[in-house]
Length: 375
Image 1: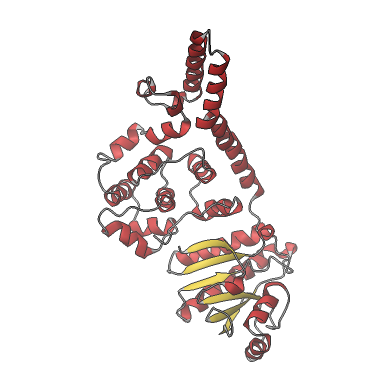
Image 2: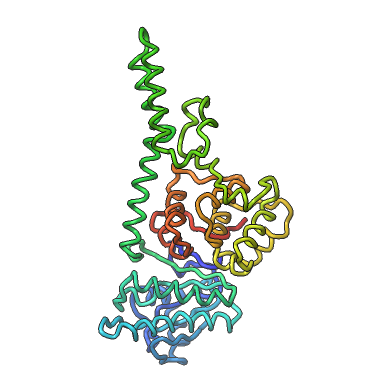
């Protein structure tokens, strides 16, 4: 996919170029810089750097990758963080990313891997450093195609907005945990205990208990159930939030898509047109490679992965019902028993459609990221 966050040692990345968090003198340092020098061959790399040093803060230069899997090393000089000159620090850090990306283009790279520049001994607050990195990368990808990786070696070095993380955590607690209690497994446990309690002589009481559980379930999920009659005679184990969510189709969605038996690509293109998006906007907002979007668009009966379908839903800013419709066309559904699904649902329900931000949260929770996969 065009931009992804990975937990890896940057010197092991198999990309065209890796970025070294360099000092302006291009001398071997500590942290990422020291690791890059050691892996590439410290003396050879230092000799090459000495010929092009120094550079200014915010600038970038390039050398061979020497012993690395990467063909090139791009040396970017990020700023030492200065809270009193925060705007200047931000400008320097943004320039370090943009100059690195432009060098990658100049040298015809198709992939590049960044560390979180300046977030180590240079003291840049990690959450702010991440915001600047993603902003620079997003702006670049609006105009160019390049596979970009943000490499995080230690998860503790990756920080996101505490407010957003708290909101997502609360949503997970209220939906994922609750669904595991009130969904299939938990509800059946309650049912089993209830029926066992009233087994033997008073089976009528057990039946009444079962009906009472059903009634409470309908009350708790009243807004989610478009037609209670559909479920009236279903076995109890089918009455869970996941099964209901998979069947919800609002009137607005029914008007949007007349025939759910059409191929996924046909329904996708109708949604794009009726939502007023340009196709190029959609695949870029979906963090998707143009070639994969072309494949989805043109290959008859192509079925995307769930992550790709969800990325497209996010890109088109679909509401929850519309998202469920698009997923259904690809053979999927959102499930409250999957933490990945609950996290994505939080962003859809709250109309937060920044796929970079969503992927940061997914990464924090050790979940797969949204966007195009290898399929």
